[in-house]
Length: 332
Image (cartoon, rainbow, N blue to C red):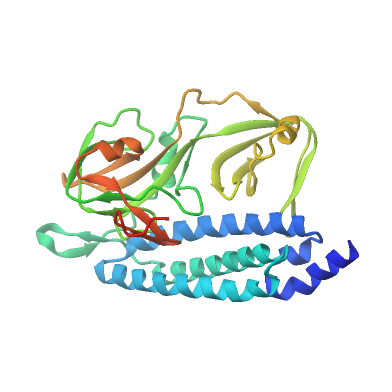
């Protein structure tokens, strides 16, 4: 244990994360860094999507070029930083810590670059004007969702999927609000790639059934350096959204934080947590996107397997982290 602790302490500067200072064992640092990475990537995806919304055509081109350069830089930097630990237990931790740090830095860059910039819109007669920033999915529509349903402005996962490729104008039914029961709006979608990483002007969100759990024994975890959350036996918490890498967004007494999903541990978690009945039984999770329709309105479209049967729509490819392309361009 002393040797392991020494190895971890010696690695603190290269790991570049408070996790190495807050914890002593490799397992603890690994879990902490995984939480940081899941949180950082969720924030990056949201910031990139917001930048895509606010960019005009010229800005889209510059943003796309800068993303390619940033991805190449991040991958090379993280390989260099983690290489001294290759073959050891710290290799993947160092790489994940680097990716978390670079994703957070990129999120800040995107937020600063596009802060205050309004989304470009086509004015009557074809002139380009500006409109006040559109209300986000959560602020404008969450109140219309039934109790027990969470609306998150993201598609979950390190590599959110799918990529929706519209190869020619396609007609589909959509909703005025993401939680409306019926899809009553006819919407003609313009050609393009639709994904949180793409240049298409769209909003992306996930509707999930909020899971409710009761702790069967005391639970505590340092969800970030210096912040410990404690849940007593018998107390109830919620899981609104899955993030990535086995981590979920937890909600407890008004606090939200990222931690391992409570159903990750199989029999061990079954003995620690009891899942409670949902407040919205029968609701099925779904990913949605809000697009401009040629009919002059916006509509929320369900993004599921049924899309691939719509003439003019097919599944595109994720080319690499932060990059998407048409079908056949080297999907992962």
